[in-house]
Length: 310
Image 1 (cartoon, helix red, strand yellow):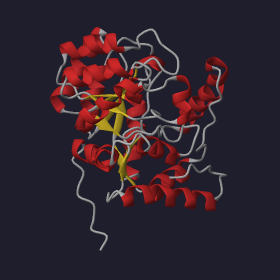
Image 2: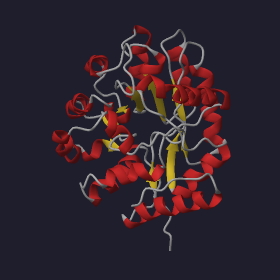
Image 3: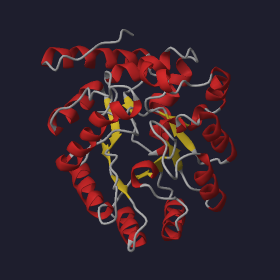
Image 4: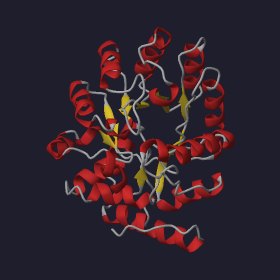
């Protein structure tokens, strides 16, 4: 698969969509399931983009946003790519944000059928109430961002929430690795303590735990409901500052059923197709690609069978 670069034109969008669709069509898939895409209120998204604009000097590398488009075009692109289910990962950086972000995400999912209704949380008074209400309202997945939120997942305010989500079987995508820059509560140790108390929690480690890949794969081996998503892993961009260890590649096959496609769309500094290219060039095989790029996610979210194209 060639690495294409979008020039922002309609033709470029069509060319990239054709490239992505060729990937999953060749594998015999009905499309892709992407568990790590971002949609959020416009004023919040602008602040997120400003963060990535500023993170270049912080990390010593530029981070251009490839899909800095208005919402309608971003949704249309994912549809054209053939992403049959995606998320609206959003997260608070302080108290008082999580509940209204979840309300926005519920409305977004209502008007966007392919979106798995997403919610978020923060250690604050009332968190158990609004998480329960979000689950009752149909939330399919939660996002927790330990780096941006700067909180310990073992905060006492969150303990009943984790139990609630474990009982409901609702997955939580958690940014807990120390990339691109470490936080006070990132790394495998806080999450390890959390899982020791809530071993049934369906935790999806974002970015495969970059850069602490091996440690988070250890947790996936230890706990049957822990998964990892591929977001940005193995790409040229990430391999420059957080290369995946060659010695760990065999474990990717061993943990096939625990790996989910994630992309970080639209906040990625390269075309969407490159994430797929990066997975393909690992050389693990088409069966692995089918599981990671569609089947594992479809099973986790009990997606209906895709219509027969004939």
